[in-house]
Image (cartoon, rainbow, N blue to C red; front, side, top):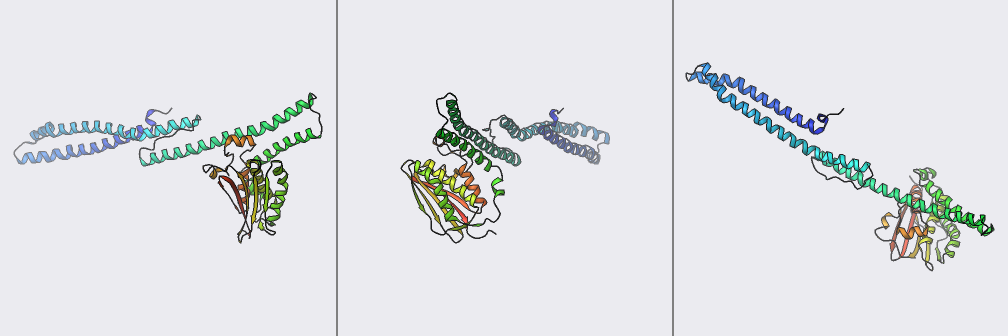
Length: 361
């Protein structure tokens, strides 16, 4: 069993005491052993006998040495305790905070104090706690988002099926299509979560994507999204030159465009406009998807491509977003050698991505 002497404070105190004891012993032996003979020699030169000189040395110098040793020992004990406390106090604080962190209290922090090494440990602990708190928030957001995303279509499915069972709704084509739409929504969520599995997107794309007609890919994606835009009451504008080429996987580009257009449809109010542009370039081709609306707050803009991040969380939940579409866009584009970005101002929001024109080296 670990005893109190196994603690770092006790060991430091014992080390200080041992060092002090050895130093005092060396001094005492030196003074008493060497000093006695020197004192006796000097006294003999002045006519004092050796026995009398030894008695005088014992009554004066020896008593002083003993008293000094006692005082020095007491001082060493006090100093060793103070040093041990100064060293162990921040370590105990880190230990207590670590127990709180292990118990689920992610707000646990410690003061950065003590010797340099201990202060560095405290700083590292605080940094770890911040990261764990952020990861815990991501986990909670994911659970809440996934729960909502699953609950809505499942509730609809349950309602339709119960209505059919009770004879309230006839199992006609329209009812089956509505059920199928809810099932497809669940499948899209499942595929999105699968796509965010670590490394899946990077392994799915080749190291050097083939050349493709980016303009044609953009036009095809817009044609597929146009019915949804029209149902939402949005005006669609397409500005794509006849020949915009780049390097990328057709399936990846289709998914990127689908996610960006779905995002624009979701957050553009009825009567608003969505504009899609494609621009050729010497090294990179650029595609921009713009939509009218309230815009993205500046504090949220740097985080829109993070997994499960929601802008205006109550509105996003009502719109049905899971907070993963833009994260997929970023991973697909970057895996193809391109870049993504976003900017927003009151009344307009733009998402863009680039793809390389030449071969990657």
